[in-house]
Amino acid sequence: MSPFTVLLIALGVSADAFAVALGKGLTLPRVDRRSVLAIAATFGLFQAVMPLVGWLLGAAFADYIRAVDHWIAFALLAGIGLHMIWAAVRPEHEDDEAPGRLRRRDLTVLGLATSIDALVIGVSLAFMEVDILPTVAVIGVTTFVLSAVGVALGRRIGSRLGPPAEIGGGLILIGLGVTTLLEHLRA
Figure 1 (cartoon, rainbow, N blue to C red):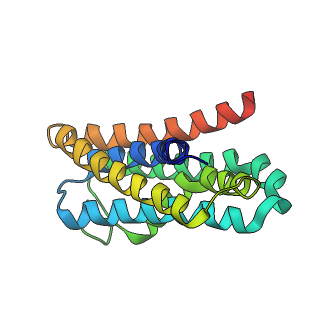
Figure 2 (tube, rainbow, N blue to C red):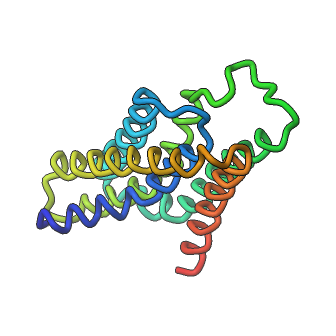
């Protein structure tokens, strides 16, 4: 597999992570290096690990995963999106944690939701002549960079919008979930 093909695969699987990072950037009241690093590292790590796991599993579970991956991604993305909208429309943030704080659990769920397709791609990579470790490294680094850009870009847009931006971020996640579901149902 050529390096250009690997880069195209990396860009393709990282697109949803970029969109989710953009949504997170829209909703965070304060974006600092630590927040950007946490989001980008989480998404990059999941996008690198999931194809590796898929590659290791090979074809044994490909049909099963492919049959439900869109439903899993839809449920996770829509659930987080609805939670974000709910948090924006409540009169006050009633979370025990500080408003806008990045929660590891939320990042983990988002990382998983955005990387399910990467798992299936990893399964397909098992049938190709590909050096898997450099391939997943390119996917992880590409996702890391695009996610960091997404958070920063979302923050620039969101700093002027406040709670409507949080609603927008939630709608983006729900839209990604619906789009993922519709694309797979049409196929």
